[in-house]
Length: 173
Image 1 (cartoon, rainbow, N blue to C red):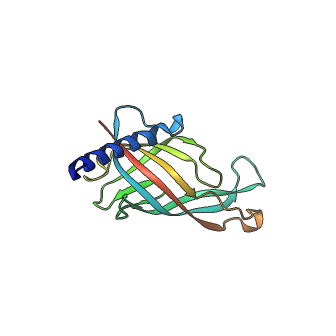
Image 2: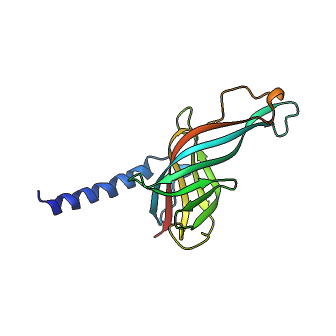
Image 3: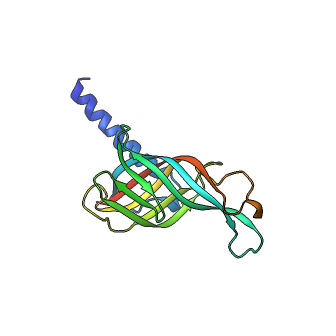
């Protein structure tokens, strides 16, 4: 096999594995047909939780999601943007950014955030985020609420937990 055949062959493998990744996901977070991957990133960062009163449960407290902060890197490890909130915002290094509305979540493995599908709002600025219509959160590690006690005594206390997730950005074909 010569070099050009090997390059062509490995290119086909990459396409196949990307398609397989979508089919292996829970149905509720699959991106509708008619979209293609625009950008694949890995987010590494932290999520802040705060001990607050439970909604509609007087006298009870719980760890409540406050917001994320992560660096987004491409598959080669080069930083290509950031993820922060609220509201959840993905910003590319070129300045373009998007926010979105959560459409669905699905359980991942224990101790990890759930899978997520977000419908993107139109991008602000021109660049990598232009044309993105959906964002998937997959390949999750960590990020769940702290295991420490959240009681009336520590109400208002914040805890930061580490997490990692792949964010797959999709655009219409």
